[in-house]
Length: 253
Image (cartoon, one colour):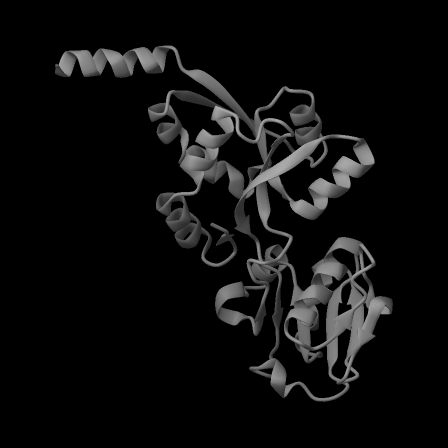
């Protein structure tokens, strides 16, 4: 009986289909490395193709060269579909690299005084995202009809906050002079700031900027798609993300 089981499993491995997944390295490579064996048990080999840009993984997916990719959030995917005339869909949330607000002057946003100085990134996507963080905390309201909002799209600012735009990489350097700074996780980590421990506003998992698994439309119920989702959305992968990235990455499942 044991021999029969062994040869059945061996036969599955020898005849395994291949799942091709396109990624950008951080932190996706870690996830992929840790699901290889789990996919093997489901009868699939995993082939990981790493890209160093954000355009080619979607083009390859649309052309059928990949079964899935994992590197982008929904706003980027939707904008890509519109600009490149592709037909890609998100099938599962994976993780959020949270944007957060930090302060060396107050411990709670309720303590911000009228006219408080706040710095946010100045590039379109991150500025709009930073305004979402401030709005999430009840500090402002913005015009939701604008795709990428700027300070000009603030409709309500009851505390008359002085919100200034600055290159994203420079925002952490303003912490000594401002009352609050909204900082991307990669730049926060470089400044020895941990989103979980050090922020006073943390982007929540309702954020549209959660990174997703994407497939070509029509492949949502494909066996390969379901297998990939099954092995990623597990307690094991959640634990790896939490322990290895220490707040830089928040599991979104």
